[in-house]
Length: 201
Image (cartoon, rainbow, N blue to C red; front, top):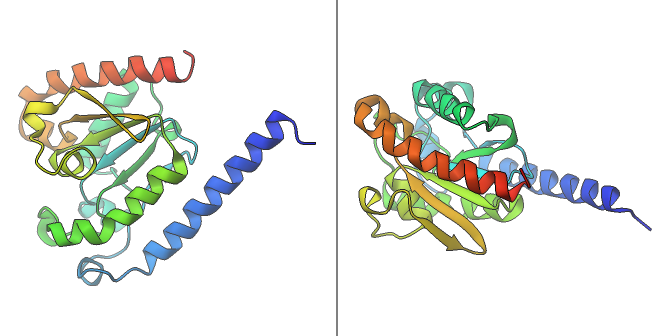
């Protein structure tokens, strides 16, 4: 009979295996035209058992080149935000709504979001985070409400499939408008409090 540690280890291996299979499927995906114009698929990275999941919009140039989410200037700012609330990037899971870079860093079309959304849904299902942070308007409309305005609903908590979901501005928006830094800081302090409670901290 398996003890709790062995059960937990097997569940971890199962989650990692499912995520790996899903990633391999995504790598070969051609459901929309984005794959033909980008360098590679940026699936996501982090802890497959993360209690905190961060969802952005789409890969940018640095992400497309390196194959990792949030590694450009916006990603470096996100790392600093996480560090400021005592959360390690490595203990979270980070991904985007769309896994391939749209040309000229435009916002993805709705048809592209719809094609890629099943991967995000499965990522959330397999990782099963207690908290999901929507970074930017597209993630907010994809995971909270298609008609949502991020300026109106940011900082508010929603319950989706028994998990807490909150929207805040994308780090790239802070680089363009430093006035958004304080609202994001307030949002992430809330995330920190829920996260610490969730992990028994």
